[in-house]
Amino acid sequence: MMMAVQMNFYSDAYRVAMNIGLDAAWCGKTPELTQIADNMQRFFSEKTEYLKYDSYLPDGTPVAPEAMHPHAIVATLASASLAAEGTYRLEWVQRLWDLPLRKGARRYYDNCLHFFCLLMLSGRYRIFE
Image (spheres, rainbow, N blue to C red):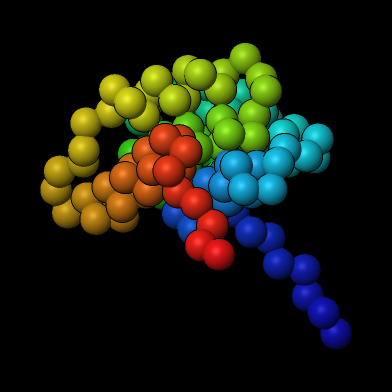
């Protein structure tokens, strides 16, 4: 018997937005992924407070614990702008550009995604052939 598993939006899920942006950069935009990128950016722009994020149920309901990597959320949502066409795409790029590097215990994951997403947005992250 298969059991349904509910997956919450948590640290590993942040990279979904990044992967959507990378796919658009390398393979071109698709309407389905553009809609997902736009939805994610709209949710985090309209339903959350900047750099104060929770974990979320699939329906957007916030749940504990608070997000451990808020800088990673900003970085990956900025990279989703490569696929996005909505109102918030440039806002997220600007947020990443203005975001200082994270200091402290959780800096490694946040700053790795920060640099990786800047590289993607620069257009210099290319497929090796």
